[in-house]
Length: 185
Image 1 (cartoon, one colour):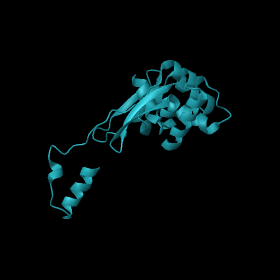
Image 2: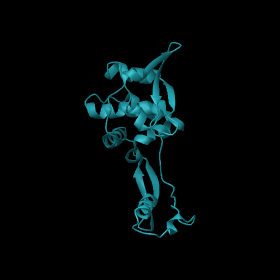
Image 3: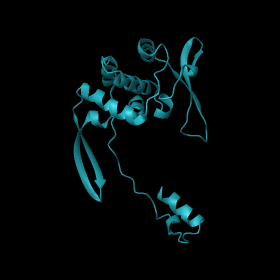
């Protein structure tokens, strides 16, 4: 972001300083603590009765589709019945991936037994409706809390140049991308 800003300032004539183009001017990377869910945890989430909390249930259903397809939230949170295709008797989501516009990949993700059950039980045999990512993130943490995923995870980070360590409950680290990471793991 900073390099984009500096390139703009240079192009617009606000500065002629080009030191930021040096190979020594680079972003320092920091390892973050990212979690994944085990197959047993995904099954536990799938089995949890959330019928008293429809918004939380919707977030859980959208998240689980991410766990079963391995797609990014921009792809798994935007599915519709028009994305369902049948090839050789097997149902798939036909997804034109949004993230990498350079390649515009289309992938076919099988509709697993679990996905079909989610759609049949609560969504009129269609994919769950879209939910805003910040809301999904809040609700999916609540699901983890309801499931009592209280195991403390050691998180190390730098804030204001000072290295810090915190022990954070696993449920509080769940977010939309956890679905993709869980699928891959």
